[in-house]
Amino acid sequence: MLNFKLLEYSLSSLWRRKEKNLALVVVYALVIATLGSVLLLTHALKTEAVMTLTASPEIVVQRMLGGRHELIPIDYAQTIAEFPGVGKVTPRVWGYYYDSLVKANLTLVGLAGYHEQLELLAGRFPQAPDEGVIGAGVADAFGPQIGDLLVLEDSSKRRTEFHVSGIFRSQSNLLTNDLVVLQEGALRDFFGIPDGFATDLTVQVFNPREIDTIARKIAYFLPDSRPITRDELLHTYDSLFNWRSGMMLAVFMSALMAFLILAWDRATGISAEEKREIGILKALGWETSHILGAKLREALLISLTAFIVGLLLAWLHVFVLGAPVLMPLLKGWSVLFPTFDLPRVIDLYQLAILGFVTIVPYLACTLIPAWKAASSDPDDVMRG
Image 1 (cartoon, rainbow, N blue to C red):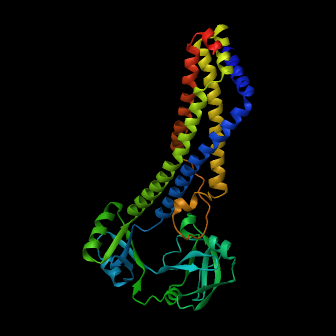
Image 2: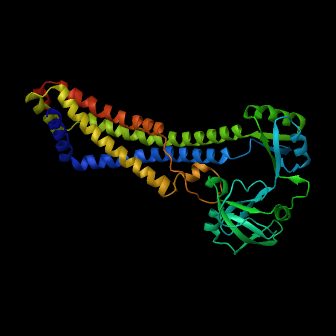
Image 3: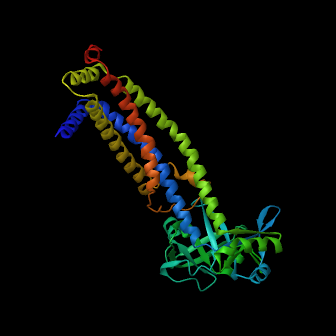
């Protein structure tokens, strides 16, 4: 019964100062929404990247010339295929295409090796040089459907028309949303890639424990090549998103610190009315622990309300609106096409850390001044 009365008192105390507490909750929730948006977006992008790279080949081999990525001779595939433990070695032909109309980058790839990764929503794979299949994001941005024309312009300003024969998707939106799949011959003609060369090579390795060993062999026997393992790509993406999110959190933590300073200033500057209230409660026989319990309930009600509202705002900003404020900063590409749906995943550990760094300091800012007032003589407190 006593706990219920304490809770009733805490609620009535909050209601008596509802305007001030409402303003505090709004500011508190906005701070949590900002920090929460960074954490949710970072985790969603990392999850999307992992989904993308899980289906990627064990090793990708590029040729380097002057420190830059160059076309690689297809003959290198035969050399790599002779290494023990190596399965299929597949030359890939692909490239980027910038469309000035929609101001976006597309990825054009050859059909070889992509049948297994793509799930057709409608239509069929290209069976002629003037046919192609597109990702759902391309269809949404450009508007073409099956049977329509997709017009692309190469570096010599020559316009090439492709009939859309299908629309596809994959497990990862990041992998295929901007993808246009063409027959290899048509793609070589569009980019001007000569026969006997490819953009890169993908290497299948039977034993995952031998991936690093085979990568070192490739680098040794083909000195102008650069083998990139799947684990290296995963580590690069993880480090990249961690670094960028860390920079953003460092900036937004200043907002949290400013809020905590405001909360401390408000708490230490207890109004005369609140001091008299504490003094009256002490005079009526309330113990210091009862007063602290009531103030703790008030602080918890404010902080938990703000935390829940802030997380809901962060969820809406990231997963409903697509994080328009933060997405360009975290993705980091100057021109990225297209927008894609983020996986709606939440890291409970990150939420626990967010709750700890936002709720615990506020509780301390509230309880310490209340404890000082409750520990003083009731007559002195009521006299101010």
